[in-house]
Amino acid sequence: MRRVPVDRVMSLVGTPAVEAALAYARRHRERFLDELADFVRFPSVSSDPRHADDVMACARWLTGHLGGLGASEVRIIPTARHPIVHAAWRPAKAKPTVLIYGHYDVVSADPLQAWRSPPFVATRRGESLYGRGTSDDKGQLFAHLKALEAFLRTSGTLPTHVVCLFDGDEELGSPSLGMLLASQRHAFEADFVVVSDTPILGPGRPALTYALRGLLSLEARVAGPRNDLHSGQFGGVVHNPAQVLCDLVSSLHDASGRVAVAGFYDRVRPAREAERASMVRMGPTDYQVRLDAGIDEAWGEPGYTLFERITLRPALSVNGLAGGHAGPGPKTVIPSSARTKLSVRLVPDQEPEEIADLLQEHFERLAPTTVRVDVTTDTAVRPFLADPDQPGVRVAREAYRRGFGTVPAFLRAGGSIPAVGMLQEALGRSPLLMGFALPDDGMHGPNERLHLPTFWSAIETSIWLLAGLARIM
Picture 1: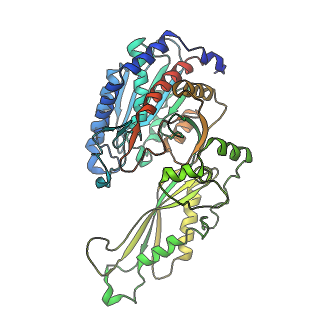
Picture 2: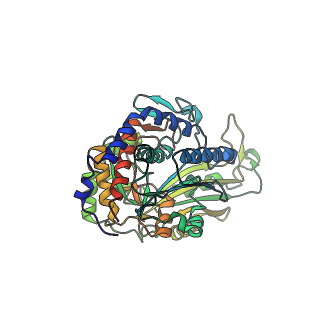
Picture 3: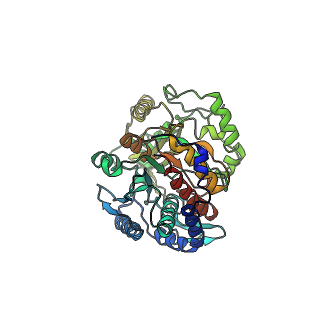
C-alpha cells in the first residue's frame, strides 16, 4: 500500500460525492437523532444476565438498521455470551477495505436515582442527548453508520469497501472476539481499522489517540471464620476479615500516592522528554483534569502532571469493597469474609500476568495467619501503542480537520479497549483510534450524554475519512 500526500486528500474538497454526502447529513440531523434514540432505548447491559434478552433485541435492531442501509452481508454471530453484529458493503470495483469496530453493549445505569431522566429514554436538553450509551459507544458507532448512509443515499455506493464489527461484550472485555477473529479472519480482513470509543479534548478540540493503557481487573478475597459471628460473643477474639481487608487495601499505596507493591514499576518504560513536552502542549491542564473529574484537589504519583498520571503512568484503583452488613439498622456481626475489586491500568512494558502475581505476593506477605487471601483475575488487557507512520494517520488527521475545522491533537488515553489489541494481532493492522466523546460526557456514570455539535462533526469526519482512505490503494 502506498502513501498518499496530504494535498491529494485535500483535493477532495468540492467533489460531488463528498459534497452531496455532507449536505445529506446536515439535512437529516433530526431524523438521525430519532433513530439514535431508538438505539438507546435498549438496556443492552452485557454484565447483567437479566438483560440478556435486551442485548439480543438490540443486536436484532442493529442488524435491521444495517440491512436497511443496503449491506450486502448482515448477520448476528452467536458467542458464548452476547452476539457480535457483522455487516459488509463490498462494491464491485477494487477499493481498499475499512473495518469499523464499535460496541452496542452498555454498563449498568445504577444508581438510577442519580439520573435526571430515565437512562434508556434518550432525552434532549440543550445541546446534549442524555441516556446510557449515548456516548459510550452507541453514539460514536452511529456517527459512522450515518456517514455510510449519506454516501449510499446520494451516490448509491461507498468510496471504499466497508466491514462493520459491532461487539456485544466489550464492557466485559470482549471475551469472544479474539476467537472469532482467529476462526473467521477472512470475513474481517481490512486495509484500515477504525475504532471510535475514545475521548477528544473538548468541544471543537478533536484528538487522535495513539496509545491506550492496559487493564488488569481482579478480586481479592479475605476469608476468616466459616460463618458470620456475633460480635458480642466473639468480638476481640476473632480477627475480622473486613478489618484485615482494609489494612491490605491501605497498604497498596504509600503516603505520596505511589503504588507500594514491590516490583510494580520495574518494567515501566521511561517517558521520553520530547513526548512529555508534547503532552503539556496538546493535553489538558491540571485545572481542566480536576474540572472534568469534579474534584478540588488532586492525588497521586508525584513528579507528573495530572494528564501524565492518567495516560503515561500506571495506576492501581480500588473499585469496590464488600463484607458484612451495610444495610439499614444495626447488625452486630463479624463477617466470615470480605472482598475488594481492584483494577490496574498498565503501560508499556507491563504484563498483566506478572502484575497479578506481584499483587498476590504482596497480599500473601502482609496478610496475618489468622485469615486466608485469594486473588483471582477477571480481565487482562495489554497496553496498546499505535504505529504513528501508518498511511491512515495522515488521512485521519485531515478528516478531523475537515469535520471539526481544526487539526487534531495526538494524545494518549488512560482507558483500555481490549478489542484494539485483538484487532491488531489478528489483522496485522494498527487501529486508528478516532474518538468523539467529551471528557465530561459521564461515560459509565449517571446522566451520560452525547454532545450534539460533536456528533454532527463526527458524522462529517467519518465522511471525509472514507473519502480520503479511498485514495490510498
